[in-house]
Length: 271
Image (tube, rainbow, N blue to C red; front, side, top):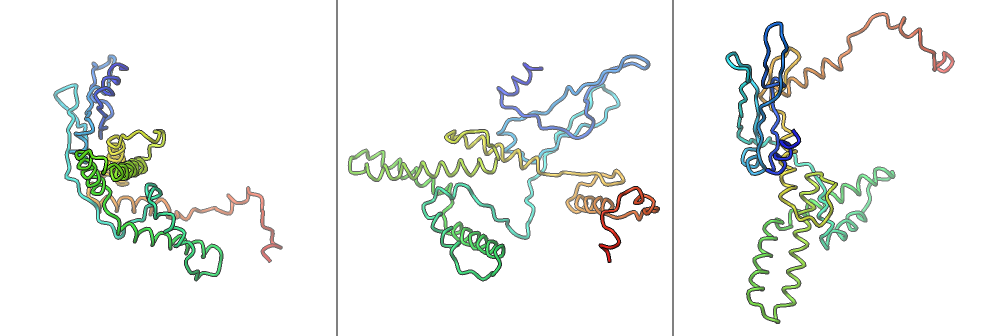
C-alpha cells in the first residue's frame, strides 16, 4: 500500500472520496469467513478537478457481482446568490504604497460615538468602508500583471541603455504584483506551512478549489432518513433538526432532580 500511495503522489492524483457503502468488494461463503475491502477508488489530478469542480462519487449495491459499482456524477457548477458580499481583508494590500495612509486617514476620522467600544467599532467601520472604495478603484491584479509583463518584454527587446531605469522600475513592479498574487492565493488556501518565496501559485489555486469542493453540501438525510438534494430541502432539513434539538421536551419531576444540587443562591439573596 505504501508503494501504491507513493505512485498516487508521484502522479499528483487525489482520492475524490465516495458516498455509500464503505467497502466496494466482499467475498465469503455462508457459514464461513467473510472478507470485505475498499478496493475501488476514483482518483484525479488537479487539471481534471479544475475542469469538473462539482463531482460526486456514488457506491451503489450489486446483485450479480462481488464488486459494487462506482458511479461518477458530474454536476454543472452553479453559483449561489448572496444577499451581500462579505468584506474580507486581503493581506496583499499591505504591499501597496497607499495602503498605510488610507488606514491612518480612516482611523483619524471624526468621531460620533462617545463610549470607548463604540468608538472602536466606528473606526473599524471607517477603515472597512475606505478599503472597499479603494479596492473598487484599483485595476484587476491579473490584468495589471499581464500588462506589466508585456511592457517589460517590449523594453527588454529594445535592450538599450536609455531604457535601463524604466526596466528596473517595471521589474520591481512585476515582482510586487507576483508577491501580491502569491499572498492572495496563500490566504485563500490557508496553507501556513509554506515559506514566502515559493512562487507556486498553481498549488495554492488547487488548494482553494479543494476547499471549495469540501465546503459544498450535495445532499443530507433528514430525521426520517430521507435524502434531500435540492438547496431548499437541504436547508429545511437543517432547520427541522435544530428546531427539534433546541425545543424543550418539558420534562417532569424537575424538582426531584434539583434536590440533589446544593443551593448557591439563598432565599435572602432572592429577597
